[in-house]
Length: 433
Ligand code: MG
Image (cartoon, rainbow, N blue to C red; front, side, top):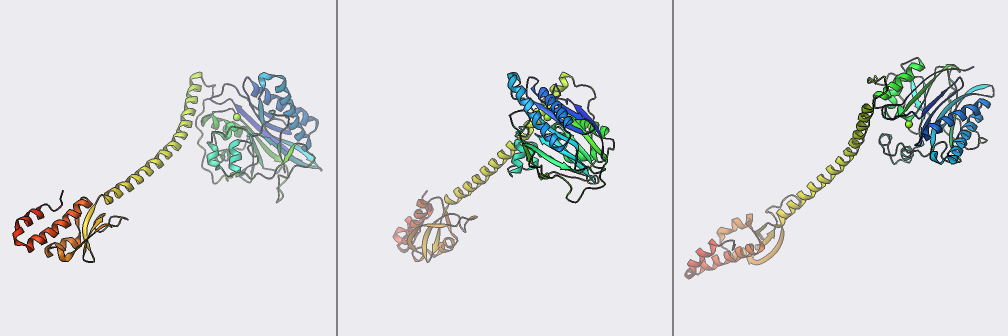
């Protein structure tokens, strides 16, 4: 025998003017629908979906009946949108849990389409059961994005599956054992966009009353921005099995459930946290009355600023990398210029050689011989040899050659006293300009 106790809360949030979320709470059926589509389409889609779900599941309260109910809800919304062009494109997410009997045992049947979510808390650990059908989540699954990147990705709200947007829909399905003490959370993305799993888990593992927990979660989401409608249902298994079998839950759906995608246990990186691990949740004070027009404007501006801030971080990183590259490239060319515009005269194998580069080399640049003059050390005065061994700097190849020629003139002048005047002249024009 299974007994469930639940509590729910919903709120328009601080930015939207209407609430297109809907919660269904009965003794054996719990569902959250998050409608989408302009011209009241979202409200219509969510309302038609949950109404159809309730009626069909009420007629056939089994696992198969729940799946049938989702397919019928899809068909109803789709058909209505075909008949009312102004509602074309409307649709809704749906995550629902039904308490059903199978082979004399109670089973919790879970279905999901879209990005509303279902979590379970078992032994103080919270696990995400459903998989978001959104562009960003698909990119996480294919390895293109991390969970952290997906949380701020501009396409995180674009759904890859929704109810009522086509004639057919694939539905994720799980079977779960109702274990006494377990707690389930069904919520729209208005909650998970504002609070992370640790913050949600902290409330679910510390607030005993399900209604109180639902209220607190909605208030916290409002306090963190409330940029979307927020809807929360908390369902406690008051009476149930004493513990789950080792391979507990989440069997694949039976093959005879038309349109149902057999789902395996959630493997999409669900985060879990124990009550002892999470930090206390600071719940900002949220307004208890409906926000005024000005407050809504402010909230919208805040949202835009946050989005802009996120873009800026990325832009800043790009600019930083580009500037860093420019500085490195600039430094490289300055060093290269410094080297290639330097010359000196040195000695190699008793021959005077003109080198390009710095004497002794600079960084990774080594001097390169650009002119072997053919003049030997024997042809220049001995008093210059020390300087030549160390290297004599010149401003250009021409200037360096001129210097070598002058050294020869000195030698010639010294060996021919009649040219003494020339010696004085030539030594004074060492660099030849
Ligand atoms: Mg939403």
